[in-house]
Each structure stands twice: as structure tokens, then as C-alpha cells.
Amino acid sequence: MLRFEEYLDDFNNNIVFQDFFLNILVVALLTSILRIYYIRFGNSITNRRRFGSNFMPLGLTTMLIITIVKSSIALSLGLVGALSIVRFRAAIKDPEELTFLFLVIGIGLASGANQSLLGIVAVALILGLLYLVKQIEGKTQFKSEDKLYVNISTDSNDLEKINQLLSESFHYVELKRLDTLGSGMDLAYICKAKNIKDIEVVRDKVTELSPLTTLSIVDQPDLIV
Image: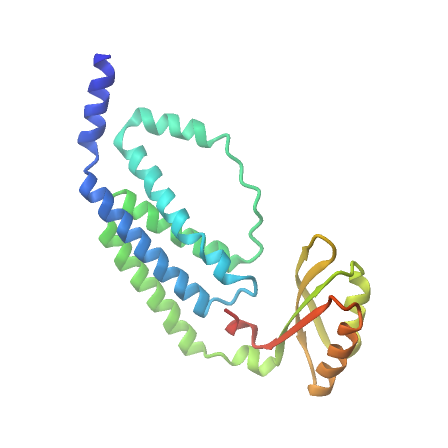
């Protein structure tokens, strides 16, 4: 019992709760800013709002783990053993998503190590540089290539037919994402059309697949939020 009390006193002495609460606020603020930036300027064609909602929980969890680990060697060894049995199977299909996840983890690491100021400066510099590079490069890539983001939600499971349908009208078709629904599929394509007539033809053919089929075509997928 005495050992436990000594251990608890040592744990409380190693953690300053005022700093802990301040770090929580810093992580919440930085991850919220990062989420807004990712939604506004990210290039991923996936649902960036839903993906960005993971930033704050991930950052706070990372901060909590580092705070616990640095407070006690015994806790750190036990935590490593506990986390070694956890396996994550979520596939990261876009390198940009992985980059932002690492940045969120970096925010949590900095705050957990009581280096919140370093985290604030780093995030400000990184986002500032990313924004500057984007402004220098401009947004001519998608405009010059006339790329379209095509999303098809249908109760049909004939993927080959849909691919053929698009290929007949668009001179460039690339399947970027396929999600299976309860009955049917949700498909995301990057396509190139020569003129509006091609888009009209695709619209008519796709809507004829079934009454439940919906089509969404957006120019410049880098602007999707």
C-alpha cells in the first residue's frame, strides 16, 4: 500500500495539471485549424470533412499517451506492451491523408512533451509554406487538363458496364474509389471530356441504369469540400 502511495505521489509530481489542460487546448486549436486547411485546400477526392473530423481525437489521444509515457518508465513499458497487441487495418489510399495524419500526430507529440510553443510555430510554418507553394504553382493543372470528378451512386453491381459507358463518351476515365453499399456501389472517377455534349450523353446513359442511380459531375476536383 505504501509503495502504491509513493508511486501515485511520484506520478502527480511528474505531471503538472495546469500544463496538461493548456496542452489539451493547444492540441484542440491546432487540429481544428489543420482540419479547416485540409478541407479548404486538400486535393483528396474523398470526403475531406469526415476524414478531417478524426484530427482532433487523434491529436488528443497522442498527447495523452506521450504525457503518460514520460511520467513513468514503468507506465511507458506497460503501455508499449498494451499497444503492441493493437492492430489497425484501415487503409490509407491517398498519400496526402497520411501526410496530414503524421502532422496531427506531431502536434500531439509536441504538446505531450510540453513543447506546445514548438508545435504552434511548426504548424504555422508548415501550413504557411504549403499555402505559399500552392499559390506559386497556381491551380492550372486541373484547368489545363479539363479534369472532371464524376461520382455515381447506383443499386447496380455491374462495374464493367458502367466503365464501358463512361469510356464511350469520355476520352479519359480513371476509377479512383469504389465503395460497396447495402445493394449497389458508390463510384468515384476522374474523367476528361472534350465538350458539353459528352457530359450530356453520359448523364442520359447513367440515369438510365436504374431509377435509384444518381450522378454528380464537378469540374476541378481539387476544389471539392
